[in-house]
Image (tube, rainbow, N blue to C red):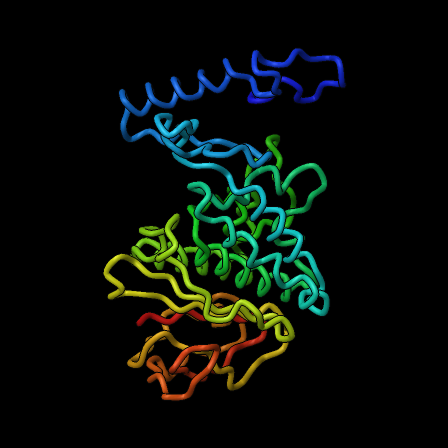
Length: 316
């Protein structure tokens, strides 16, 4: 609707009064629609699926924006899916696919989407996009979902993918609930439940989603090991989270990660626990004290046995 020439051949459309290809009437319609709906129903979310980098989709109409509440981050979705499909040996060469979205995160108010579009029309379910043996697919997906939950932006996960449905979604039948009789699928459902509880309990995962102060990389450049680490902050900085994510099947028994301050770091979640379908027992050591060892450009650091395809989350 935004473009006069969308899907049309040269000569098959008429420019606007300024000689451009923007549909001025459609732009005014969106501004009016969003202003009216938000004015009458303040709790309603108006969400745009827009994939052409149109500016100010979520900015206010008085700032010449379209006035939507959120915009689907299609760029993040494509980069995420392209990366997660790769055999781990090739991930080091595509490392920055997973960091790129943070370079434009402040441009809009985004939703990270894994929608129905990603699990229909021979695109495979989320589980079967993953490389490796069957059990590896679950481990890959757990670390992938952890990255999604920790990354700036709201979340959209399509039904059935929270328990790793094997097949693509179809409108002709119900979800494959019988899969929950299998420990791996049940473990995935339990893990997504834990991720959502983590999200609900920690404002740092949503309060400053679209502001620079809400997210900080610890190490975005560990390409050789395909490991990412970052911190999420809320306004108070009193209940922050440190994420460390390993996207290879190689365990790092003493992985050291920089920390932004001294003090205690409490382990809240490990994706490799047996209750989630992994290989690790419940960790006996739950609290780590940051050492005065410079690492990752930080003054302090902690060392932790990072599992293969493992994601860990610390609170500090």
